[in-house]
Structures are given as C-alpha cells and as structure tokens.
Length: 176
Image 1 (cartoon, helix red, strand yellow):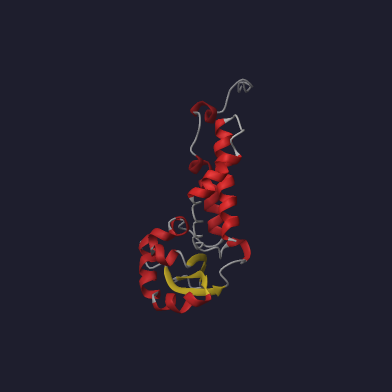
Image 2: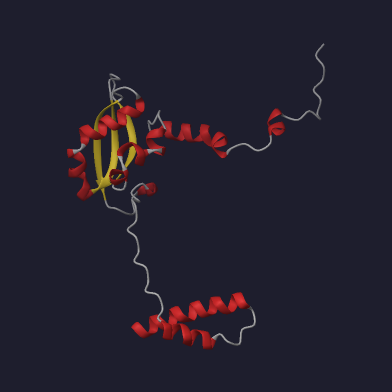
C-alpha cells in the first residue's frame, strides 16, 4: 500500500531560496518569442550586439516566417521610412550577421517594413529617442536671489531644494 502524502512536506523549490528572475521568466519569454517565429531568442534580446548599435537604433526585428518548403526563413524588420533603402543595401551583410547567431543559413531573406517612427502597434516602432538638450544652468544672480527667498526655511535639505528650484524658475523667467 502506498503511504498517504504528508501535508507538512514542502516543495523542493522552497528549499532552494530565491531564484534568478531570468530562470523564472525564461519559459514565458521563449513561448512568447516562438509565437512570432523566433526560435532563437538571442536575435531579440541581443539585437544591438548582432547588427550593431547604428542599425539597432533604426530597425527592430518583428517576425520570422517560414516558407512551406522549410528552406530558409524570412525575417521581417521594422524601420522608419527614410531608413528602408539604406538597410536594403546592407541586406547581405545583415543576413550574414543574423545567420551567425543561428549557426547556419536559417534566414534566407530580409523583408523591411517601413513605418512612422512613433505610434505603431505594440510600441515596436519606438526607436532610440533623440537626446533632449540640457537646460542652461542658472546664473549667479538667479542663485543669490533664490538663496535670499529660501532663508527662512529651517530644514537644510528642503532649503537647498527650494533654492535650486527657485534658481531654475528665476533663470527661466529672465530668459523669457
């Protein structure tokens, strides 16, 4: 006869303690990427390393589709309208780099889909944002005026924060 299960027995997972997030999510990431045809998830996770930072800033892999014969797949790459012809000229080089990840000639063709740089479904067209210009630092007169306005504040940290905020506001108002 089989012994009844002991309800005080804990699962072996609890004995190991904390697990890495990557080990907990790896199966979910794999299943999500396989739905889009990416059997090799490194193509998605290491895209910038595979094709280079310049190309990764203007293009994203979307889907891998396989033909009926099974010989070579087509990788769909999303890019902005102006960059499409430039990437088309680099197709052989890009295909070599991508196939190096697979270890064989898995990708036979690249298809470039052009779109607007923002607002595409699922956020796939969100390319590297252009850096915002840094605001000008407040001049000495703005800093002195802000210090005099925050003199009555007893808390040192709050006073410094108010001085910095006041200097930015005063400096912005002077330039306007």
